[in-house]
Length: 311
Image (cartoon, rainbow, N blue to C red; front, top):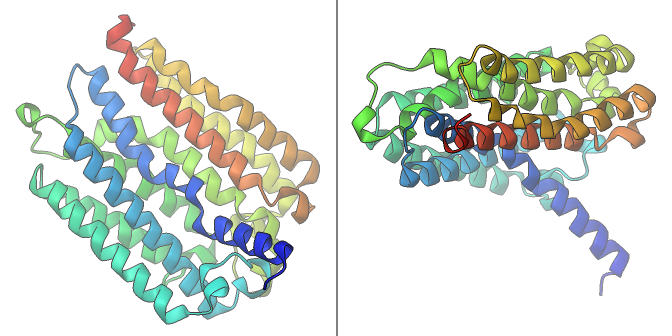
């Protein structure tokens, strides 16, 4: 019988491998789009919202699983990432198969969403998936060249938000063109918060990344300078969320995104004082994720509540 400590440790590793908190980045574009539609006096279609959310979760599961598969091929996870699904299971072919199945399932659901709204919805989501593959998949592996963050912003910002806005709009208000303007205004700030999660995931694995030729932004900048960039990313994310309020495009209740600030302050303090201590900052991405989730949910709720409160 396995020792209780071993069982507990393995359970903790599997919990880390599943990465369930990370799925807030997958659902945020759809939630934000629903909130924005409410702020415009439109009722988002609930069935479409649920299908879009489920598809987004499946597609992020593909992204996470395929990332473990591709990183196993380069050996970058061998030492610094014991919670890799491939490392834990020891069954790369099976994980690759499951990854591909989640991709197919997610795209089939999104095809149904597109069939019930606009065909371009599927094209936009396929573009997001393509960017995800460029980030991690051979022969591109653009994440190894430090380009993961801009790809992340594009996928979770304008592209995913435009797809969600088209998918959720009421049948009586179906738009023929992709709403790039609203998608950029709505998605730019929250997508920066999502990009911050990826940026912070590099801090504790600089040595492993350097050893395997992965030139992440943190590797290129060094941990001290990278830590100094974090407050600017947070400020830019919130500024992009608050500027439409100042311009009276959004209700003042949209300022509820401020609820993410305490997590942001914790993250800034942690990296400022311990950026050079991998064991102390391994959880920094989860503080970034808390900021992303809370600010995004606050913005969603604020947008939806605006018409109700007359703000």
